[in-house]
Length: 292
Image 1 (tube, rainbow, N blue to C red):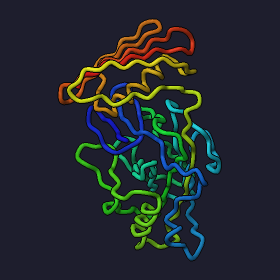
Image 2 (image 1 turned 60 degrees about the vertical axis):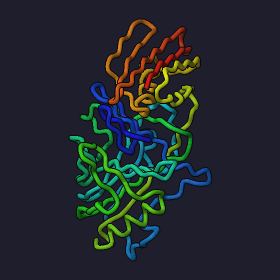
Image 3 (image 1 turned 180 degrees about the vertical axis):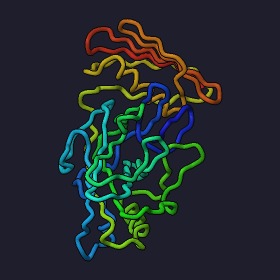
Image 4 (image 1 turned 90 degrees about the horizontal axis):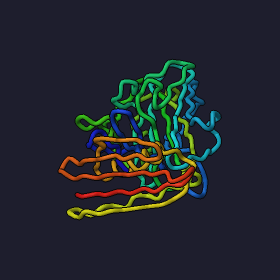
């Protein structure tokens, strides 16, 4: 799983911009048994109930208590709020155990100081990208940690040169909870708190056929025919995301009635052409020609 920013990749969720493509597949922790809370308090239990409160939720469940479903290709927004001024840290736990740090990030609207009784959303309304569901089915988890004082996350995450999202070094929800319990060890125990939101990724409505990997040094043609309730643009965006995971950056896109043709390049000279044809409402033919 990667974020793709103009040909560079870092671990991450999927976001699409008019000017740039960031790939951050959001298929977080797959746990068929339950949607138990991920929490540093599971490692260090506060002796008193913190007066600070944080809440995290998605755009399909304002309560944060349910587990809404998102199909591949859906846009998603994550929201968080606090009852007091606080620094809020958001993390995704992925199916393979890797973890993405959503907040703070290096985008203009990625600051993580949240005023009391206000709502912080990701992506922000001013951000010129969307947060898209890509990846396998499963239960996804987002952890929000709020602290009255700013935390130093250097021991568990770091920003690589030029990358917008921090790379998290620990893996798995238990390791994340343990690492965060160490981070907050010097903070008064009534001055920090956590919350978790869950949702499921499902194949359901999208019906996209995933794009297989291409072999290096070989020119290949891949074709798929399928039905979907998504529009032409959404189908094109999905396969643009699939290609971005393989190192291809979009260079040109031409749209005509019922057809979108996009061309891509890689940093080391590879090329690809994606053609999406809508033969009739809900019916698509996708062709990808790649050469690495």
